Image (cartoon, rainbow, N blue to C red; front, side, top):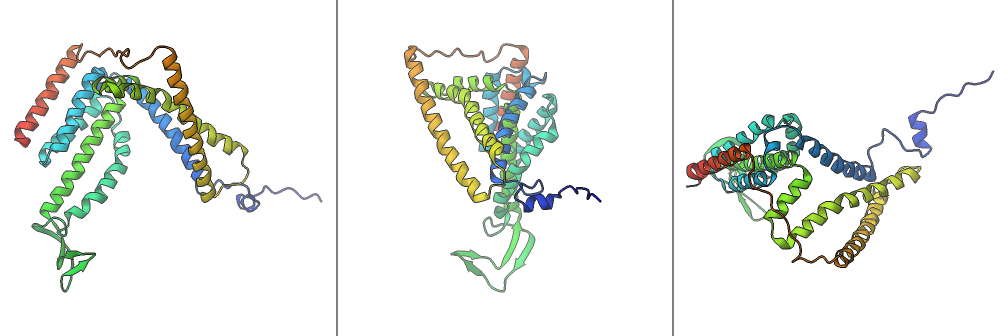
Length: 309
């Protein structure tokens, strides 16, 4: 009798050197995934900035200036209620701008976790002494580790927990306003607004960087897709890192040559820093811009008067 062919299992294919779908993601695959994610997030921000929400209707220059003032005041705040006021204001702006709260808070989770790792040691009486709340460990006698004197009772203090929570809320509020700014402003208008408020010498750098950063990202994607289309077996972690390092060097050479060609092209067309003129956007042009300006000044004034004076 003729034997029927049994399909090769995933284990048999991997033993013969074929890439396994169940195998953990390689270094090059991760690089490609993160590269594509940058492009996807940029496209996603353009979509959210076209929604008819509160922040989307505000003048980009006015929005950049006011939100930057919020972030500056948050960084100067030492009082937790003042920071919470800004955070609640940012949370209210999410549904008013027709954004998805779950999506924004998912993007904030890694930053919050990283901040917790930094802030949690400050809650111990090793760093901030104060009223004991939770006892963690008791030594028979005081210890000294790496030149640091440890108390006999290791505990979480009220003052330390307050300082850790203040740091966490300060970072969370600042990041929330940054997300609101970038997700409700078209990238080209956001860059133009930054060019207006930055010194004149940095304006060409910002504009050229925005125009050519996606060109270089596409080059990285072409490098990886070219490798993926030609390889048969999986590439190890060490070999993948060496390949990525070589592509970084090549990308640097491409960007260097591109900058030289761009400089020569600009000079041949009579470009100079003195001849560059950037028309400023009006700070406000609609009633909603005036209302937003009054609201921003009121919140900043309230915080300065109540918590900073």
